[in-house]
Amino acid sequence: MFPQAGLTPALNDPLRGPYLRWIAYYGSSFEPALIDKFMQREPAPITQSLYADYDTMLGALEAQLAKGPYLLGERMTAADVLWGVAFNWTMKFGIVPKKGVFVRYAERMTARPAFQRVTAGDAEMAAQHAAATGG
Image 1 (spheres, helix red, strand yellow):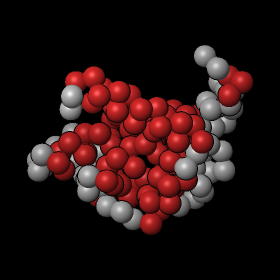
Image 2 (cartoon, rainbow, N blue to C red):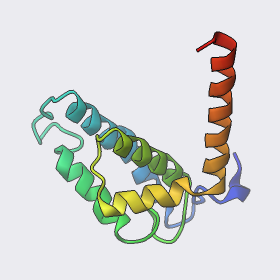
Image 3 (cartoon, rainbow, N blue to C red):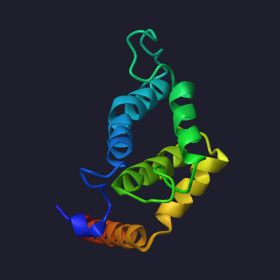
């Protein structure tokens, strides 16, 4: 909707495929692996699993993030917004280990001014709700 923001590679950009891969990987591999780990369930057999196993899934992310400051190297995209927030939350709850590459990535993303504005807005809404409900 906002191509001028440059957060999504254009249809003819060579980074479009890798961008879509990491967007899809989030819902098809990361989330199911996290849920299985949290629920202490064994993943499906490797021949039927989208993510193989939890460590393999995290290893793919670790290897990709080791290549540059963002998923696509030097270019930040909307995929990084999704993943940065995900790493920030999942490491806070101990679902994802606080490995150096993940910590630095989450810090880089949560230090961005837009993230800070959203966080401040969330805190303000929570305070208003607490004041209105007495909680």
